[in-house]
Length: 384
Image (cartoon, rainbow, N blue to C red; front, side):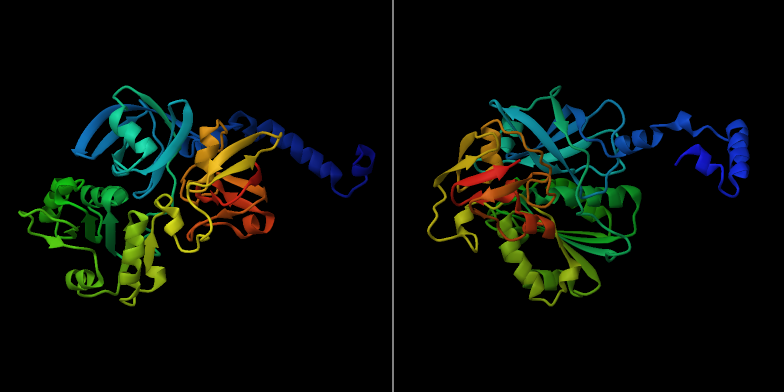
């Protein structure tokens, strides 16, 4: 609007006088320009450059990597994770790992890695990672944590294998900070000689009356004296006695969810009282409900990218893996079909996405898929 027109408006002169007074006596906010952005970037950094300062051998198949920055680390809530970005054999890839150290420990993040059969990243971290090595990670992320308003004071934690890691962070925070919560931890493992944190959990449960540790071993040794088999509805009922007034948390491999979720729901526990952490994509995807019978996991398809480049991909592994192996960089975070950072637009072709992939309504309408949890069934054309 031209100055001549503004001058004709009622009160124009008073506004000009007020502006002159403010310029003379008011606070100059321009000196704070960028301050808010600095705080945001400090709490929610795009990435962190961390160093492995220690490696703790936990079991024959698991180790804890202690990661420090030498300075400030963003805060997190017990149960959250960080995503590691690694260059392995010329392939840039990564995985998300729950933080196993408690939030009150501000000097480092612990991540506890267990060997996964044919695990590309876990094998590298267990066999080749060493103290002094630098690793790029994301900031803490995830929604798998206790909410004091929405969740019950009594927590029933059901873990399988390395699914113990977010629960370890929660339990350590509770006992170290004197938080008023009661915890029942059911921890399932295949054998009793490979239970992560067993000695620490045993000591904690014997010291703190609000922490109940119940290991359940599928194939126990002769000297084992605890519960054997699986975490069934009968086991839960016997140990908990009263099932209501509790929030149930699950973290473990997909097979554990397939077994334990029906057990819990069969007890009449409302779905709103059950929380589950995303835990990667399932192995043996062709056995997953909904997989088309005419497609084999070893089928090879062609993926056409923008610019005319083509790559090959296997139907039995997530599209993101094939993209990374061919040097195509796609942002990622959870690699479980939840966060949507790795989404790409599917222009043609079909993919299989297992149940639990959290596609937004807009993604479905406009043809976007989460590449970390999309298995190509035929030749594709995608837009990244």
